[in-house]
Structure formats: structure tokens, C-alpha cells
Image 1 (tube, rainbow, N blue to C red):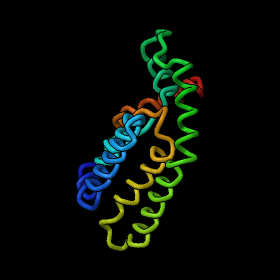
Image 2: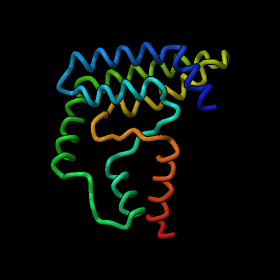
Image 3: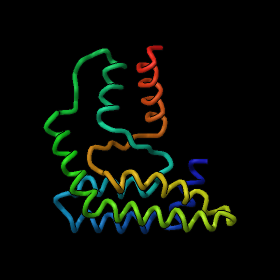
Length: 156
């Protein structure tokens, strides 16, 4: 199902979204890495999910039983500041465009082929709105991170 969703997404505009985000990454070179992260995610969004560095570090600590933290406090503060600037300038526009595309595909749900695009645009809203301080991982890893952190929170 993931493969079919990725193929439909790619054929119905995922490749164009990748090109547009890549051009934007080249134009806005100082923030190339987060924008290109969005571009790579927009190419095939169904096999990947988004987690925060905090979730990833907690997961690593719980799995390896070590206290080594990859996330630096200064990096986190800079990422949060960049997220605010991005959100106030381009982020809300990109998120709104993905939401409009989601609604357009939702209105055409009877075509059945647009259903993966609804899901794809829903997934793209989060990373388009706040691209800094996010990590794109495989879907199975993201699910494992959520399960481990939930077990830790519930003390199971």
C-alpha cells in the first residue's frame, strides 16, 4: 500500500513539488538543509515520518541505556528561533497551500486516486510549517519511537 501511495503521489505531482522545493532551497541558500529536507520528504512521503530530535534522543537513551545526548541546547534554541522566523515568513504560506491542496483533493475523493494525495498533503503540512528541529525517519522507526516513549511515560 505504501508503494502504491508513493507511486500515485509521485505521478500526480510529487516530482513537481520536489523540483519546486529544491529550487527554493537553492534560492534561499542559508536555509538549504531544512528546505531540502522538505524536498526529499515531498518526493515519497509515505515511507517516512517526522520526529523531533528530543524524541529521537529519548529513544536512544532508553534503547541503549546511555546518557549521551546528541541534541545540544544551543542548537535547540537556534532551531526554535529559526522555526519562529520561518513560521512568520514562509511557513504559514506553505502550510496553507498544502491545506488548500488537501481540501481540493478531498473534494475529488470520489476519484479514489486522489486519496493518497489527501494523506500526503496532510503529512506535508507539519514539516512545511516547522522544518527546523525535525528529523525525517522511516515510518517503522517513528512508530517504534512512539511506542517506546509511550511505554516509558506509562511506566510499562
